[in-house]
Image (cartoon, rainbow, N blue to C red):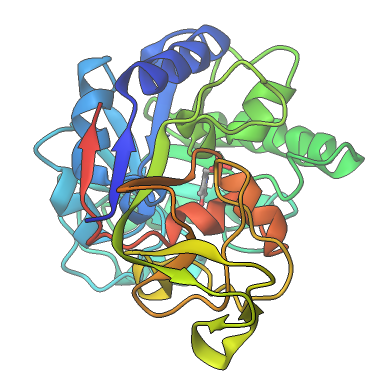
Length: 332
Ligand SMILES: *Cc1c(COP(=O)(O)O)cnc(C)c1O
């Protein structure tokens, strides 16, 4: 059976690095959305909790319910207001129109659109929003923003940072309660010189060992496949759908039990898609298997998702998050 291993020491190392930069484990909101970026939320959550993490962010209510036994504070990022909100969770207000649809006493964080133009309310709407929230008996507990280009060295990051500072000052003036602020994702956290003292960070990817701005992190996930069968491919014989791979000499090949139904990108047999050992996949990937030279019972597919990301011209986020939740996972 194919297998995902999660390296506990690597995860603890990464979270320690994040805590050092952010000013403590209590300054971290761990983003565990989408099955903890494909790693497996049920395995990552207890590791985070044992390190002292009490605040996480997820995509929706189903994910929040799944993690509620572990964390006191769960922020839901992509919520469509429906009036039956759970009063234990914290809901992101992604648009002003949501306010009137939320249940009374719902705890919310306001997302401010400081320039990404994906979600959030505008700074100029804040006076009205705080007034509305009071009338509707909603609890605004926090205010946050998200950067469009935290990973690129251009001014948009700095301009959004400035706009958020302005939003913080205004929100503090408008609120009669304490407020939590957060803006830095993985790239922003390790890119910034000094992390703001009045904020939490809200990090996903760097927990799992990937960052362009901190080369000191360790990959948490390794993906393995197991051999289904093996045979000798004779010179001139071809392999798999369409027969796109043709042996130029006799070779021992094997089929391994991972395919595009397991969330891998479908390799169409063109170009060199490398396994962790540097050898290439052979022929088109099938739904539930791929072929390569025979490397024995267990084969490491990747330790670094960037190898597959660059082949498919995408980002490591996408390679990781697509790994099927049904794949077996274990902590090592
Ligand atoms: C996914 C997400 C994050 C985490 O981003 P990383 O780049 O993985 O650190 C933070 N904030 C919001 C709003 C997100 O959607």
